[in-house]
Length: 172
Image 1 (tube, rainbow, N blue to C red):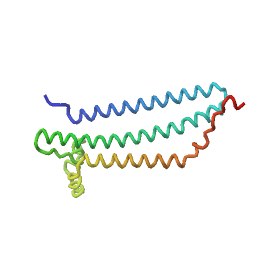
Image 2 (cartoon, one colour; image 1 turned 90 degrees about the horizontal axis):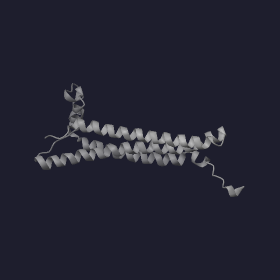
Image 3 (tube, helix red, strand yellow; image 1 turned 45 degrees about the vertical axis):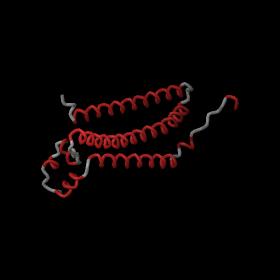
Image 4 (cartoon, rainbow, N blue to C red; image 1 turned 60 degrees about the vertical axis):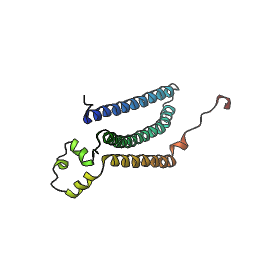
């Protein structure tokens, strides 16, 4: 009995990644509502908006950077998965199954990938480059870029210094 097709596996993965995204947005919205309710209890609109803004900025920044890093990690892991699949297939069949960028574009029914009329040299180069190498390289570069951006963003962001410290009841 043959296993699930490549397209089937990709759609299952898209659904899982999409579900993770919906859960992350739902969790963020829940945190925002809790923070808004907690601050509105004080009956001060200005205090509520400033406290929610001080809460939203770092949380939103962290979520955006986390989502961007997760996308890079997903690309990296997908590239490693393709390479591992090729190795297992080689060990089972005894012949290497090539999976190039052009093969991936053919799976997406790209007319140029199936029958190039121009840019034939680029087509040949993309047919030589393994899809796993592209995914691993782009994923790693993406993750490094996100880490560098997060560090630069945190160093240059003024709202971190404007968060007022909480007063203890013993201060008066």
